[in-house]
Image (cartoon, rainbow, N blue to C red; front, side):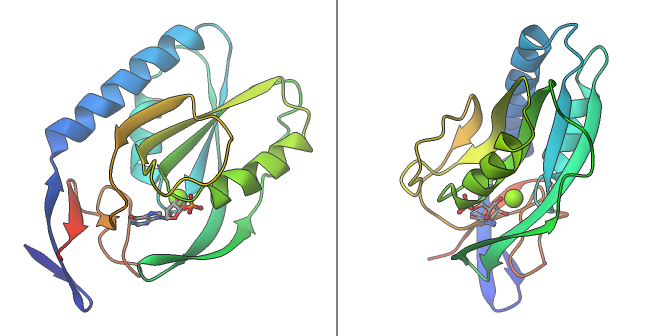
Length: 176
Ligand code: IMP
Ligand code: MG
């Protein structure tokens, strides 16, 4: 059990399970983007660890960029997604892979979709380490999903509770 600010969290997803999910997504990306010089766009802050692990495993040319979005306060979404740092790289005509830590309501994804639609990319797909199907309210398809979880609040492996917990190498869920 761990404590972050006022809340307690218990172990939920092990390092081994996370690594297995990363390996699976990476194998598919290596097959699907072989010789295509994709641009990986990580969504900060939460995706830094996942992005690093996936990009390390990509064999062949690729480029890396990040955008920074924010919507969460405490343990719930505010419903408004702010673009804190936008895309500062030309992606026109390129194959883009969005790397997300977790897709929850899908609000963030929709905002990113708007950004990319204006950029005339060749195509883009989304890879997310975690996905909460019960919370997802959008219809944008998610090509690569690591681990599906129930609608619970989790921390670790890049995900935070009010800034804390990102450094944890396994995932914890809020204790009920
Ligand atoms: P969405 O816009 O509702 O899909 O939420 C996406 C963003 O909210 C994610 O990229 C995370 O940064 C954050 N988020 C969603 N669920 C959790 C959670 O369980 N723990 C920590 N952050 C979360
Ligand atoms: Mg995120």
